[in-house]
Image (cartoon, rainbow, N blue to C red; front, side, top):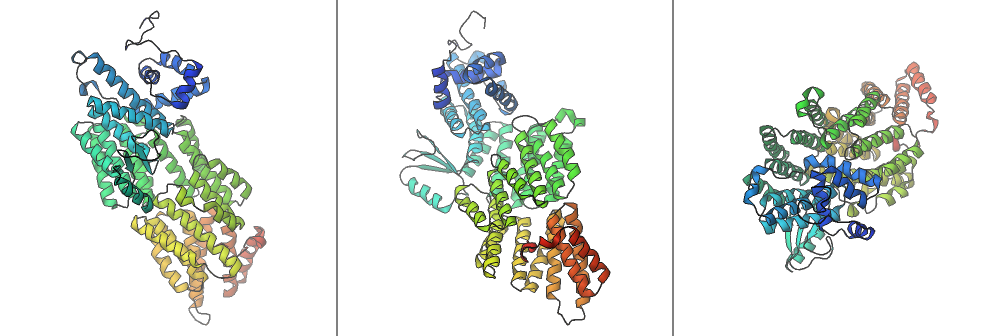
Length: 597
């Protein structure tokens, strides 16, 4: 296009963007030609794109949008020339129609990455309508992929209405996640009688996989298989079936050398192993992904979100094992390697969690509150849980209950999130009951047993072990140490195989306390049992020292001094009593129960 020509490649006059036009686009976001042109020129002419965008947004926002678009553009799969009819065989109107619908699809992808869900949904609907009119099945399958992305962030999406997410009318299509509440599902079933069409998400995924395979869109087919595996895991399907689906995606990725999807598959496997409670396997998958994307393998190097996620998984594993110096090294590597707008949220979230955990173990509550507040924009649910942990540590149980009330109703939670919420609530209920009424709350047992049922249903083995440890703690409190010991033995293998240093130390401490509680005062074997308890407590103390959990070190030292005193080993008793006093232990144990959690 010459400088003197005011028409673009489509034969239309270039739009002039006035202040009124800008406000209309930003607020109303009508799918007009100017926005399509923005997406088209962003791929063909970056200088023109910058000129157009500079009229729409301030300089800072414009630069961020351009960076975001450049990062996301490689993942916006536009069909290849081989999948389209030759240019000479297509009419001008068909060519223009294709450009418009793929521009709308790219706009939907761009705004989806910005979390502009309503705008992305509008653009996606426009792309779907135009693709249906043109009979473009390839565009429809790509739209299906982004539809899954949008619905995975919501409970459901309402289509074909003027206000997405609003009231549904006859002829409306509603895409529904299977994991929504029963009352919501009943509402949709009632609306179905009024002519409203309901499509479950899994049906959309299955249809997309079948159609993409039929049209030879291997990239979308592989993405669909990964989405199917992810959805199956969240819907409590068998882990065997989940990983079998991922193996099919692996085969496609390797056959067509799709390095980005190979990395994503490793990341998905790592996430699933962590979800099922196999931390060691999760770390192995993360290391395999990083090996695949090592500097020595530049041909397959991929620095996308999946690679950044696995670097943070390594960071989290090092944090759990108390390797804080190595954490700083890997975190600095992540900051240098992933400094773009998409990936930096991932390592920033990991950094905040690390800072919070370390500060909490150092018992600096005010600083912990600041970190939890900083997490609220990135990880809102995690931020709530961290604030609740602070209320437990400070004894403000009423504030903790108020904070977590109605969380499950107002937030989309996975099974693991619901279990985390139940565990924290059970601790608050039990500690508040013990401090006020001197007995364990029955609601605590109800909550933990409900959480245990969820863990078993969704095959979450590690959470099952953690719940058993909490139940064992309650049984020890109410004077049932033998039953508590049975639960500890059931959970111990999982905790030692895949647990963090903190959980291992907690397991050894609880096991020692149960052993002491079960030993008869007049039994000749009590001395041997106490010696076994000392071994467990020393192991627990080493774990707590490694992660700098000061309060746990103090409480463990306190128990050791009591046992050594009973055994008549005065030298050892004095040694640990002195260590306890050195650590300012006089005011540490505010409640006998607090030390058990």
